[in-house]
Length: 181
Image 1 (spheres, one colour):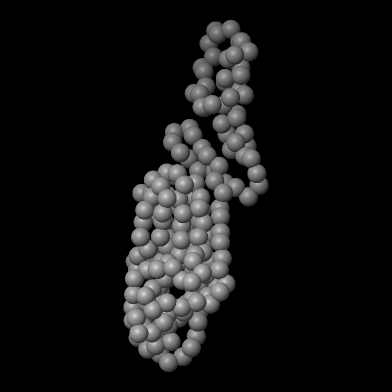
Image 2 (cartoon, helix red, strand yellow):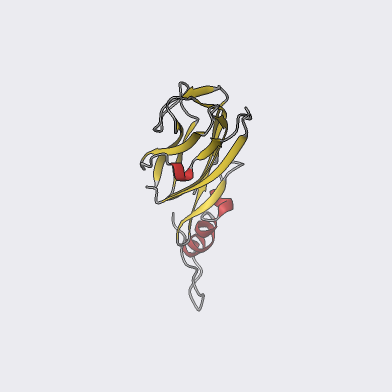
């Protein structure tokens, strides 16, 4: 069913078909008419067109390390979520991350696979540069707006790396929240 531009009533005969089209069908194209569950929101998919979206999250608490200098999975991959998106999604990635070596960096990025392919990148990653000898492991969160996606089923997965392969970067309490747009 699609939304129909309302008639300007002049002298048309009122029929059941016209009333159903103008009232019932158009009301079924509104957010209340399309709502199927609590905790969801609506985004536009075109002129006079909306779709219901579900925010989704995943977490991995396990503390793990990598010495890889390119983005990779940890022993426990993820966190990751698969959602139906339009051409954009807002992602919140968070973790405790650290690298105990001086001047070493721990990176956590987000890759997209499925109908879209986007590699994890330093420019949109969480990262901490170890410039002192302390052992603080801060919890960090970063919002990332992905645009130019192919609408459909997309999987968002956290990936990890260090800038110094001789020293392991550490990650724990990893989380991802995806708001498909």
